[in-house]
Amino acid sequence: MKKFGSSALDRRTFLTGVATAGLAAVTTSAFAQQTDIGEILAAPRRGNWDDQFDARSTTRAKVAGFQPIASPETVSFTESAINTYSQIVANGGWPTVQPTVKLQLGVVDPSVPAMRKRLMISGDLAETAGLSNSFDTYVDAAVKRFQSRHGLPADGVMGQYSIAAMNVSADIRLGQLHTNLERLHKLASEDQGPRYVMVNIPAAQIEAVEAGRVAQRHTAIVGKIDRQTPILDSKIQEVILNPYWTAPKSIIQKDIIPLMRKDPTYLTRNKIRLFNEQTREEIAPETIDWNTDDAMKLMFRQDPGKINAMSSTKINFPNQYAVYMHDTPQQGIFNKLMRFDSSGCVRVQNVRDLNVWLLRDTPGWDRQTMEATIKTGVNTPIAVTNPVPLHFVYVSAWSTGDGVVHLRDDIYEMDGQAALSIGTNT
Image 1 (cartoon, helix red, strand yellow):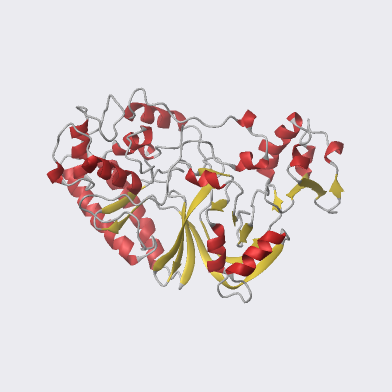
Image 2 (cartoon, rainbow, N blue to C red):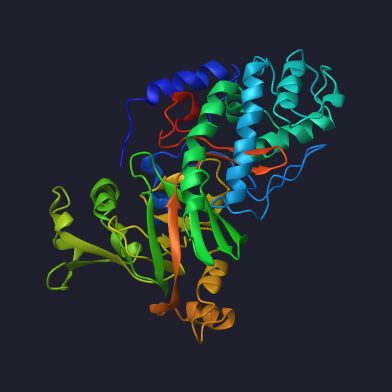
């Protein structure tokens, strides 16, 4: 997997150029303040938003729908979007938005007409709304629709990331659509089967698809830039209720050992026990020299329970990257603006709903039985009777028809344009 770090300055320069002066970047939590395993695994605090909000335009369809990304319809609609964006580029693209105040409902500012024009060209605002200086309810609805299409907080407020996304040029967006059309063609050409799960990494979103329609859609947390979630194909074979959590070597080295140097009670407080990997003999934390990396030779295993890093569920599937999907005790992280903060695994919002869907054909595992088992706190592995195909994919641009073009931050810089890595630096 490609890793990044040297492009941080370019992304910061890009954001500085397109964002309004005076709009402060959202701050992240300091590592020094992280005192338990939940805070290590949680995303930085970068703002709250409702991922399920369906922004509505005055003239166009809802942004959310039941069409899977991996479908011939998505390919066809994306090809139509490319035709539309090609015409936009041929006509000179769209204007940039350079506000001097925070643009939101009720504001009157000379920069609003340019934003109105921008939203009209992209199909978010009806041309009949006109080009006045007023940020009225029509503009508010259009901005929310734009934000929802870009995976941004659909709050109608033009903050740093909304401005940055709006000022990506039409020709760069066209190139992004072309790049992702190739990915969509590949996905649509493969037989996914009657039921499958698809994790779209740039969208930080999960689709559980059945009979050609999205049966469930879940918000996700995926890998950081330097701990990326891999692209893979596998089958979900096991759901573990009340799982043990075994810390990856990267977290042991980068997070846990430094914390033990500061707080020797950290492991005990978080119910993490040490074991010899060969003999499985339990090792007392006080016998380890935490000023060295000797602990890297040991297994760090957290007992099941409410503070367990995977909380109620671990979803297993064979893969060479040792990644999995899981629950989390910190549900608030799914409301964060930037959801690229795991160590490569995928955290699933409302994972119990997904459990029920995955275990539908597994005898004896209805919702009531699952909930009762979770309450016991007993580690319970469940073999999925009919393993469900699973795909981790990278699609940052697609269309679901009727002018709805979805565009996401190219978080891992796989699209070839630095300007598309909008939110990777805060």
